[in-house]
Length: 576
Image (cartoon, rainbow, N blue to C red; front, side, top):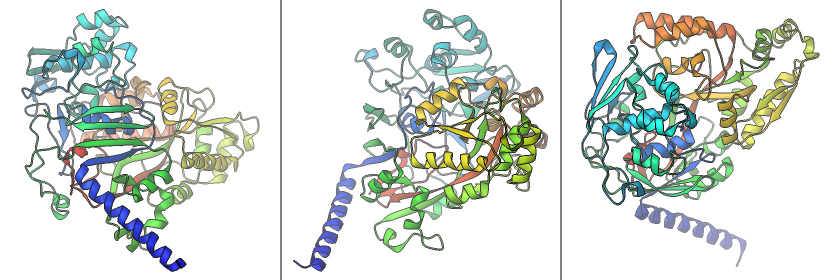
C-alpha cells in the first residue's frame, strides 16, 4: 500500500473514531470535566478553592443561588422558599425553607428518608465556628452573627459542648423557619447565604462521621457522590429524588442571542452523571479534549497559536471538528503577595516598593497570557462599585527606581539582602516558568530568590498556616461587592481566613467596619476610594492583571454559559 493511501486510511480511521465517540457521548449523557489539581476536601466547611468548589456545589445546596442566565448577577431562592424577610433595622433575617427537600442516602439515616430542617443550617454554622475544623469559612460569620464568637470561645474543642451549646443569634422555631440575628446591619450577608460554607448538615451525620466530611458527603443537590479518588477521579451520579427545579424561563440579551432559552421551564438536571478527572498537565488536558474525552477546557496559553488565527478567530480546522469557543471576562484577578508578618519583607516598605518596581508586568502578561490579560490598575476589579478605570497604582516597572528603593531599604544593589523565598502554587510547567520569571526580574536589581515548589494542596496548607513569604496569589469574587475584596486585607481575617498576607492597618480595619454596614451609595464609593489609598501606601500586594478565559467546548454540550460565581452549572446542561 502506498504512503498516500496509508495516510487516507489513518485519517479516515481517526474521523470514524471521533464520530463514534460523539455518538457514544450523546447516548451516555455523562459530562466529563478536568480538574487542574488534587481535591483538598469535600467538606463545605473548608472548601475555598475552585477545584473542590467545582464538585461541592453540585452535591450541596444553599439557601440562595445566582440566576443562571441574568447579568448583572442576581440572587434567587434555592433551598429557601423566598427571599429573606429583613427586620430589626437590617439585623434580623427570617427565612422560610422549602418543604420535603430530601438528602442523599447516608448510613446515619438507617434507611429512612431525611429531609432538610432549619436546625441543619444551625449545625453547619456551628461547624464554621468549631476550632478543630479550622474553617476557612469562619470569616463569613466572625463578629457578624450574634453570639457566634461566644459560642466559639465556650465550646473550644469539646464536641460534647458543640452538640449542646447554642448560638444566641440563630434559632429554628420550627423545621421550616430559620431566624438569624446579626450584631449589626450587613447588606452583604445575603451573599454569604449563597456560599457553600453555609450548606445544611444533619447532626446525626457529623456524629456518624466523627465530624470529618473531607471525603464523605451529605447533600441535597442534583448529583450525589458515587466514586472518590481525590488524586485521580471523582464521579457524581444524578440524584433520583432531587427536588423539583426548572431551567430558567428568562435571561439577558446574551442568553437570548445565544439561544440559551430553548429549555425554558424544563425540569433539571438533564445530564445523568459527571466525571471529574484530575489532570494537572496542560498538554494532557488539551490532548484529552481534542480526543473528545473532555467536554470543556480553559485553553492554556501555550496552545493559543494552534487554536486562533492572526485576528483571534478559531482556525477553520478547529471549527470543523464541532469545537466551539466562549470568551469570558472573569471575576478573577492576580497579584504578588508579601507576608506582612515576615521580619524581612513585612517590616520594610522600601523593600516591597523595590520589588514592585522591579517586575515588568507588561512582559509577564505577554509571556503568560498571550496579551489576553488586562493589566491591573487597582486592587478592585472592573464592574465593582468603587473601581475607577482611570486609577493608577503607586508603582510601575522602572529598574532605576527599584534600585533607589532597594538602597533606601538598606540593601544597595542587593548587598547583604537575605534570599527571598518564593513558593509556587501548583505542580505545572507554567507555575515553574512563572517562578523563574519573577526570579530573573528581581535578579536585575540584585535581589536573590529561592524557589520552593509545591502542589496546590501544599500551597493552600502553607497559606492557611502562615508559612509563605513571597507568593503569587489571586481571587475569584465570591459575590459582586467590594467588601468581598477588602475582607482579604482586614486583620480579623488572618488565616485560616482569607487574609493570606497577614496585612494589618487599624485605619483600614475601622473603615472596613463602616463599609460592611453600607448599602451601595455615594458614601460607600468614597469610602472604598479611601480604603484603596491605605492599601496602596502599604503595598502588601503587587497587582498583576485581570483574567479573561478562552473556553473551548464540544458542540454536543448545550446551554453552556461559563461563570465565576455559578459552579452548579452542570445541572443546566444538555448533551445532544
